[in-house]
Length: 579
Ligand SMILES: Nc1ncnc2[nH]cnc12
Picture 1 (cartoon, rainbow, N blue to C red):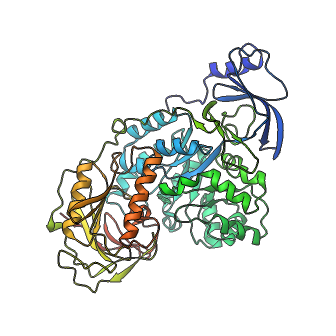
Picture 2: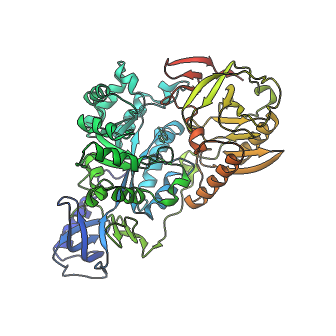
């Protein structure tokens, strides 16, 4: 980062001068009734803020007030700003639009997945984007992947030692993971182990991705350096993780809205200590966030009987502790970044006002100005410029088996018994043509997709795990139509029927993300879902279906850059075809 230290020496001297009375604070929160994370108690006092930092808490008021803003807090309860420990900031929204939206619900610190940045950009461009996002009035940290969670061509080039190491060493990167490639680690991959060791040397943590892991697997991975995991699906899973000393993140997301059940399970297990627990919305798709971000999870936790103070700390202090950043986050105390939420009632976590980095982002329910989105093309994420055309010749589907969706994201292989040699499949039953095509136009892999929809004629998406192009449908003509429109848009998701575009979501940020604000993206996603449901899509989360068609951290069969891939056997069943 351009600025290596959080505050320069000169700034630190100024902070002390505020206490010396030589400078006045920029804001004083008077008569504050606030949650003190260390005492785990509500305390009262005055909070002095200078620029973006809390410079004093206690009973004193500053001698010099200058032009300081004085806020009487008697009518509120103040809690530390919420920290989302596990964000995938690219589910149609982008890091900027998600942060802007979430900040209105009290989440002002984000630990972001770098997957799309890693796959799309080399480090120079990526780090200049991080630098630009660092200037936002929210706090953006990152975690760096060690693998692509799919089978890429030339993965070793993308995930080279040099690239991973530079990410790990970056000041804004606080974690390695999420380690979807943990089976490789257990099988002896010493490159992965080296990166884990490097992360530890740099005082950064490692997150696993361990759904269904046995007690022994958890213990072994703990020995190899894993610090936390967010894949617990039952109270017993939570118990097993905590028993091994792993920090356990409770997930409530669009594909796994588990929190109420998880908490019931936790109570059944007799767990009454919450210090090693956090929550995440795990990169939910846009519509899910209509009801809030972490404020909603805290609210569920309170309703389900988590002790009130723990319910807040799981979204603040516990996260700061896990990431070794309690000196900056998670506590309303001297020295911390001034991220504070104002609540009307103790059990109403959606804030009426939000301070982030010492500035109002929301005041008495009204949003204040937030910076405009960057010019993404300047950071190496221009709209998609596909230099090739899809033709009827590409649309050949002679594979003897296809992919059957078991739910939104889990797949299994099935034998294709229908005649798929024509240009159209009959409507009314749930098999579709499916193609993944290289965004550079070099290769393709074609098969059948069962279980998703009965009447989608043509559907094309540049949103996928690797940014390659997914085309689905019953009619080759409409698939071409959808593809052509998606190409014309410079990336996006297009649904086509009877030679008409029924719906389109423009994704001008590298073909993966929208540059609209979150509310607009929510409406676009809702409309897409409605149209797909009407056409027989039988699950809940089509965006995740698209994202995970290539993702080999999920069973059982995937289309990848290398070809059709058997996840359990770790083999390519059919290689992709050169075009
Ligand atoms: N592993 C993953 N990669 C990308 N987005 C996700 N959302 C939830 N899990 C994810």
